[in-house]
Image (cartoon, rainbow, N blue to C red):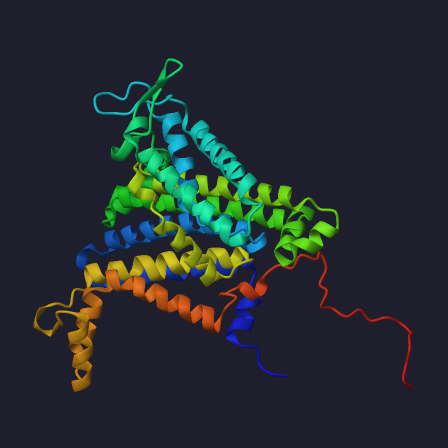
Length: 426
């Protein structure tokens, strides 16, 4: 019997240990980078890196879990993720913005933050349901076109000056148009807890050179990871329920599922609405975390990022969704940008463009190429993302954990049952 490989041993780990260990490894990577480039200020730089990367991991994990429910479980090709994020964020902003914001501000309804969060999720789900009603009559590629068009319609609508500030039934509110809208920040709630109940930790952090804003950012990132844990628990329970098994059966073969008497359209609409609600929540906590949003924050590129994370992690696996989100946001998106900012290799050894950098390799001098790559890594990271996606699609088409894709059956159909007696060749 062959020795188990590293992949086999990782597969044997519980999901919590696998995901937790991976995120801790990312944190350690950020600390090492800060130690190398930060000089005497490295503790504060490390805290800044860890806080920012944790927020990104949490936000993209929620988005990837939502997309996995729609695409990985149900086969619904939604490329309008950014639009549903905008619906949730703008609904929350309008509900929680102060009634009298002062000069230059956009008025809202002044409701508590929790009402805004719930309202944003509900409206995002309703908009998703309304979009799904006609769209699910179409094939997968047409559904993709409908969702991306809806996403752009939403972004252009909130950018329109005609709804920047309106009065309806005696209430004045609006989106702020191109200038955006300010409201009660979810980050402020965490900041109040950190500087209040957590004041001893703030004092201890400041004693070693870590600023209070960086500690608040770490705490906000940890709060997002708690949201990820809650979403993961709900979606795992959902996927293991009869409802979830029908979703996976639709993904495998919708015609067969219909022949078993299931109303597949109703199941798909429900799954689409739940996923859109989570996308709205991510828009609230991620883009709206600082208490301000604008249309420029919801461009279509974010949809590509979420799909890239899901492809890397493995469609159909909740655990893979989180690992893919962490890999994309931390190692492919955030880390290269920080390297480019903190390890400049300019000067005479740097090539002026990529052609000169590659040409220098012919003379067996890698210095210009390395200097150019590191100096422009923040831009070249998108090339890196493309290379990683091509490699994953060609060599690991199911993603990092796509082989753990949950089947539609409630029992393992690959297991052969041993039956007593029976026919024998003897």
